[in-house]
Length: 389
Image (cartoon, rainbow, N blue to C red; front, top):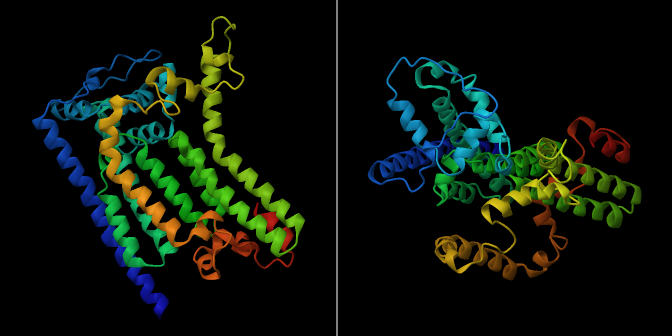
């Protein structure tokens, strides 16, 4: 009875959260339109839309006025220009390879299926803009739902989890989650991956983490969750169960899962290398092609935008640091508070967690929960674990 009531409470909270998430997106959209109508946009790159290098844009006769089309196209600024350009023309220039393909893929999919009937009315580019906004905002709503579910598992407190998710819906970075940016997709697949990891479906979590790496380069950092899980499971297998062979299986499984998470980003770098460097002599190729590890992404970030380790720490960036100081201060204070409350747990990376704390994330720590339900009945634990991998 208690579990049924708890489940009903979670369902009600999720329903309310969805309403808040939708309202927050509509609010951001309203504020964006309001300020764009009152102020001249700082970025004017929306007007830059030359024809594609390799193919001609599809042309359609307009059946209605172009006002809607112009309004949509004028909203394409900053990084949105690159995402729309990639969707429309592919990866034409070296700097476009800084933007990973998952968002352009979803934009292309929607614009050629769900919103395809609108193409003759407002044009393909405007339809792609509409698709981009739809993808980002829908992804944000689902990310908020997964954040609530993850918080419930970790905090064991539905009310606190609900409040945290509401705060997420109205966070200061909301404009990025509602624009044609990859932040929403990255948040969805990262938080969703954590949820599946904590729910005991590690392989599904790996798939979601891999998809996050198709949205943003820092998706490869999500392999850290698998490393943490592998570390604890190997410790249990080696020191508690005294089974070195099982520990080796755990290490191999964790290693393969980390490779799966990093593979999309590595494959995309290989794709860029093939397109830009392959077939040219050493004197003709770009400087990064000659590197021992020809990493395109790092070169683009440094060469075109001056992004690199500690390069952002300049006096002229002081206003941006002041702008970010509230959330940075909150994050630092939260970490310090947690460290002071449980220093032994913090320093030991969870190895000195109590049984109660481990039960709150049992499927993350325990070897038993590493076995999928379909093979849990196997009598040989070692063989069962191999089947799951």
